[in-house]
Length: 466
Ligand code: SF4
Image (tube, rainbow, N blue to C red; front, top):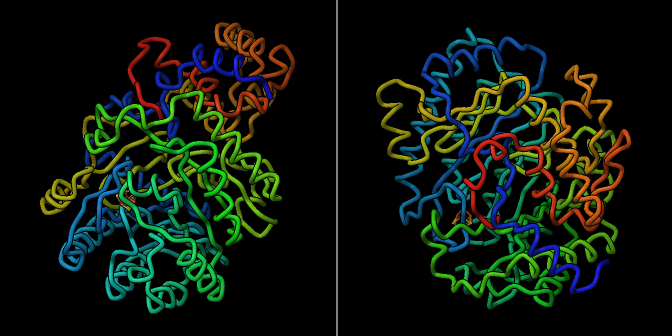
């Protein structure tokens, strides 16, 4: 580990506030292609005809009980989840009808489904079952599907009855959004959690056969190395199967509610790296296997652990995922689809989403999709898989799959990587495999950025410390 002075120099040199979080490539601000109703239906039709290939389906549930001030998700607060979710489920059903119409009665083969939000567990039992049945009649599950749901760790919202229902429907994994256990941090971000509550929920979930995941955010206001140590110790006490850590996406210019945080309460790049190093040391020290730079699994039961062992993982909107989920089909407001070399997103606002469906139109944002060129696909694979998931750029694999000579194609990028090699972030730049080092892991977005051709042509368009 480098000393304080050197780390401060590196965090000043590689300003994390000027590189985007890579949930996609290209990143969303560079999605500039128009897309129409029929284009979307053609994508779904082609995926339907893909036949035996298992698709990954994502369903977005936008409503929450209260606003967490750090939140960068597409969500809305409501005190009336019954009425809002009833109308929303009607709209989701309409979206399913439109998109599956061209399947000609065939079902979508899938082994993977995730419900995220917002807060899907804010639906009541009747709504959850109704939504599940609407999906179920259009899909054909693989022999042992992974069906996961995000949950706020609250026993009133996630009642015993709801847990039992989720198990009986076939959900296999629950992700608890914990984020922190530090009272100062929780108060600042407007969340309420207690370790004892999480422990009871985890025990009940395990008793019903669920795999248990915990999400943790680092870089939150007032967080420091000591507070993250305490939070991680509490999380370890419930022994989750998977711990997914995410860097706080701080962007008060665009996310207005984040303006409640005094600027100096948000850890800067140096503190953020220290916090990351602390949690990484604790989790790996406790026997968890690191996946990519920031996910951790215990044992080998978790499907992500098995996929990582085979080198078949990729990073995207839901974090690290088995490579079979590279293609994903999104439903619900704000959901993103990546299929047939194209990214597109549904209307973010629930009213706009429902208004499009009321006109019998797919609710897509028509002026902002990404149609990936061959070079985009190469860089997508390099960034989302090789760097973010494998922490190793295998030149030979990219040369075989994309018919390039790596060192010629990326001549400009390699000269920048050589500078990063001098700073200790990567090794082997002039060999056949470039490795991200332990020092380089917290700077991984800076390493991705080297290969981002959109910023090479129009730099400085995504300032967010995420
Ligand atoms: S519960 Fe989740 S989605 Fe809802 S406001 Fe909080 S962080 Fe955002």
